[in-house]
Image (cartoon, rainbow, N blue to C red; front, side, top):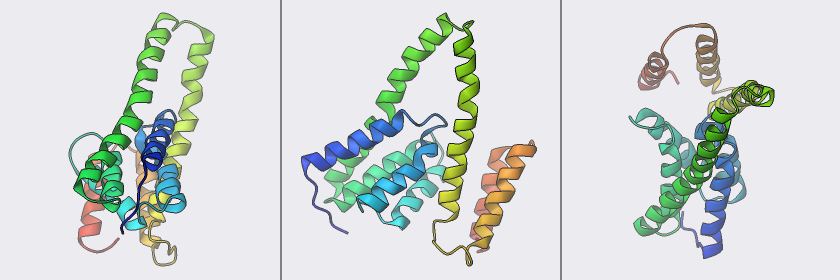
Length: 190
């Protein structure tokens, strides 16, 4: 896939990720459904396989969860012209996803710490929990339906449901679930 990018396209990529940064309350992974809509559906800068592979590779690698954003930017850049543009795509998506939320978090944390006894501050903290849960459910839904054939992908749905129940009701460490998913994938069950 070869794309023709203008300066306006690069700016649009940065601005979109900057706006998602302010929505990424549960982490950048919570905004994956909108990234998919924008990069795969609207702009067609990535294929479905490139999108899901970026998330899978970054989640399997050690390091911060947000690395999938860099891989998406890398893939967009590769599709737009090669390794030089891949570095540009990676830099723009990472700067876009990190700068606004980091700045807002720093300023809000300072203000919230100074005003932690206010009723509004306590209510805001409690009100964010359902939003984070809903965004993470949307991400799980998107990744489970990645292949587009629910009748054939029932195993992915089952693994997603079991994982969600174990996280919700159990005390199992998440690395065990990640390892179990990797094992199921390695033996070809999912």
